[in-house]
Image (cartoon, rainbow, N blue to C red):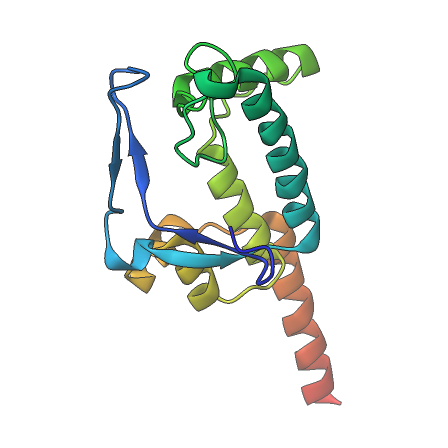
Length: 169
């Protein structure tokens, strides 16, 4: 995290197929393009700062029992400091969705797709989205996210209609 530059550097992927607390791997991402710096807005930066303050309290409470590997999201009990399992995050999400009455299968990876769809709808260019997602090839980005929302289709139709009105006047 670089709070001054409001960015996060992605350099590793967490690999733990057996959900073993101490036997995980930090691997290099799939492609060179996957190693990247992502800009974040002030609200996200402020939430990270709050979380890191909370995490410091956890470290102080556990003292020497906390193994500090520098993870932003780490276990708070039972081997504090080690990374949480993806499965734990998925289970918490499932529980929250159920409590909210939402009957959809949402995973942490779903947020990547949602974020991308919102970027597309906001008019962010394909090249910027490619960099943000860490795709080394623009075709990967375009093939995965070629779907557009109905709202964008409507906007495209309205823009074309306005253009044609101006051209015919």
